Image (cartoon, rainbow, N blue to C red):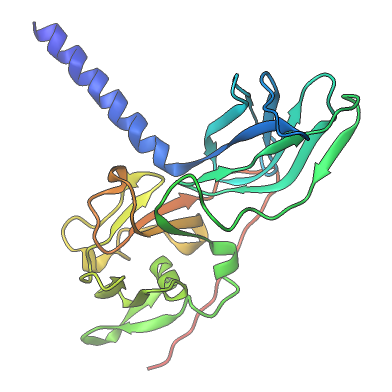
Length: 265
């Protein structure tokens, strides 16, 4: 009986960790069809990560649908191949954390050695989910004057925001951020947010007003997904916004950064 209980606890822990791991990645999905609109089963689908070279594979089902789940956030090249059709290639596909991106594929009759390269922007309307969310890259944030130094509330002699990652809230509609004490999303009470690092809880459990003391630096973060409303139950435990940071990972290039700041009283 004790052994069975231990096994149940271990299995539950594994499933719980797997569920958390799902929130640090994105999904590609879509339907494969020909030029007449008829769906095509058995098509080989590949998504190649441009930064790392990793390749993820799937196939279209009997209904022509395909899904590539658990993709690390990044830029991909999507391709589809099937004998009797030209190879479909679409570059610059950006997969964001905790989002589902739909890309439908249209194959043209021809030799497999021929290819059709599609260059198109991602759809502005999300049809796979109903949450209101924003994905922001910190490479772009570094080029904007929002990561500043400021004094902390009630302590004029000390610093408050020192390139605080949460300052990106000032780019979002319906949100405002002055310091850790004044963080509001859609009019919800301050300090009711939930912060995750690749799906793992990183909210200051004792004082949510002091997030900066326990969170990663801007230089270590690749992007952040901010869900402000209508997010699903798996992203619960939050009133004033759900933040999910994706950390930078290794690539085939050596990079680095240096930041110098100065403040005067």
